[in-house]
Image (cartoon, rainbow, N blue to C red; front, side, top):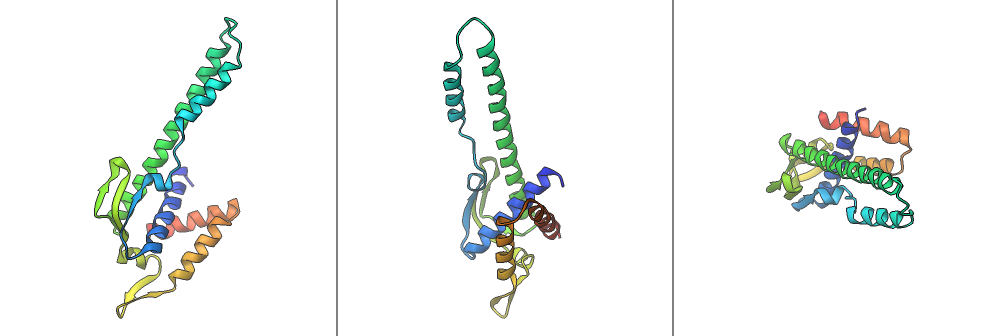
Length: 170
């Protein structure tokens, strides 16, 4: 399974789970709530400390270390931005497909205000509104997915991600 699809599945499950837990209250969702950002200043501080221990002997050792580490830091920044883009794409997909609604989406800033699970979102969780009540068996399904996913082996996790992806895609 492509890495982007796997990340989509994880983000979609996490977003729907969070909205389900607080329903009917509309909440703000932010990419920073789901994506851990690298502390760039800390990475550069570590690099500075490492370079302090390298002798200034006229060789290119310090420059090579700085160059190699600088590339690693730049790669990490790119990776973080790509992950945030996948989060935004996931939430935009859930909104455009009618699973989630947001009163004020600001995708360029990674902030989505007043987000709420829709009836379509509930139906994909095997829940529906019947006779003025929310009915179905989803709470046990959600709890089972959460329990299995967080305690799963790598193989079980991959299978769950594949199932969730197919289920959400409908």
